[in-house]
Amino acid sequence: MIKLFRKIRQNLLTKNKFSKYLIYAIGEILLVVIGILIALNINNNNELEKNEQYVVSNLKEIQNNLLDDIKESQNVLERYLERDSIQKKIFDFKNPSTIDDFKNKKITQLGDYYDDFLINKNGYENLIRQIDVMPKKYEPILKDLKRLYVILNESINVYNERIRSTVYSNLDFEFSQDWELYRKKHKQISNEEANYFINDNRYKNYVIKYMNDSENLIDITMSYRVKAIETYEKIDSLLNIKNTELPLHLLGKVNAKEIKEYLGTYQFKTEKGGLLKIYVKNNILYSDYSGSESNVTGTFRNYKISDNIYLSRGLIWKFNRDTLGEMGIEFMTYTEELTKKE
Image 1 (cartoon, rainbow, N blue to C red):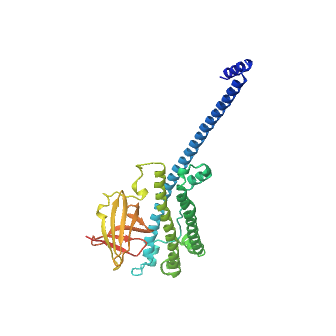
Image 2 (cartoon, rainbow, N blue to C red):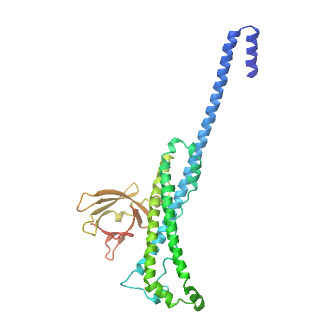
């Protein structure tokens, strides 16, 4: 091709056809410019495609990270509920535990360990490193990611550090006593130690503080869980992913057939509590609230966590039946109950 162009130029010059040569030269320059532009466009398209593939890959990694966090939040909650059941025994003043109960391990010591909630930020950090090349169509998700990995993460770290400090302070106190030495020497628990955990108000006050720290961590963990589910679904929408094969509960959803007996209208036991209608739409459990003495109403999404445990507006609750078999709703971190209306 180059030899052909050179031959044409030589013919035009030798025949003294300068004007035609000039037109030809301009045309040749235009062809070169067009070729360069085409090459640049192809290269630019390749770069854009490469950037998009990078962003998509990181968004999928973020989804995997979110699923890991959702699973871990479930574990943190279940361990908290175990501690809550122990707390209720400690503060059961109608049927108080005895020193022998502690020595025989019928009641468990509370507050000598903690669960912190550490989120996985690998996908987010990888994405942020290339934020300047992110295609505009993916930018709407950045607000949700900032909420998760900056704002909520900062609060989570505060409550993690809070409960760590509480537990370590308590352990320092316990190991300043001779209780462990007595155990090693006599192969049993001393009366002094048992009396502290059964009768000493210092221990009961510590449990109150410990459980308060635990509740704060659970509250922020569950807030993160809800936002993680919402963000996971938004990424699905951005990537046009449909019909996910994930277990429903990992996205806070339910199978309507499995909870059919629980659906219906519930009455708050308090006089001014109002009504709560529970129903399912598109595998999402909703509750419509209406106050009994006002026009207060609202529709709320409920997130399934595990088995019979749900989360709504920061409140953890479950369906239950009382000793008479009556269906009801029990809030696990809130002193309110509901009974189902027939």
